[in-house]
Image (cartoon, helix red, strand yellow):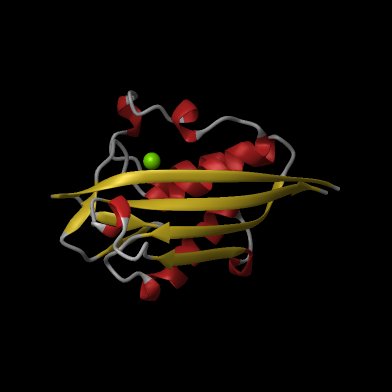
Length: 159
Ligand code: MG
């Protein structure tokens, strides 16, 4: 069995007049994330960890933010395309472990739906997808509420 691991990290700025979408879930909040696509920072970190595991670069190379095709793009659709690339490379998703770093809002109640959405896109059982949320104790740009960050590690394998 060939097993590979990848890491992903992403940050988006919070601003007014945008929806807050994390893990494919629209979360009621006064601010949303700024970006060319829907700016789903969690799905971007997960996509990057999967591409990294495959040795396929990052989502910026596959879905450039200079391309009007990806304006307002649903990042769950992009994640499905990334998983198709994983499969094309001869691998399947083993598991994903990701953390969203946000001072606000509280994300706990939305984590199960995020897990379900991501498992669906990754074509795996939800138990293979672990999503966590934490604050950074009011420190730095996440702590001040300027932005939200996400980290992800993913394991892929070929049987
Ligand atoms: Mg991004």
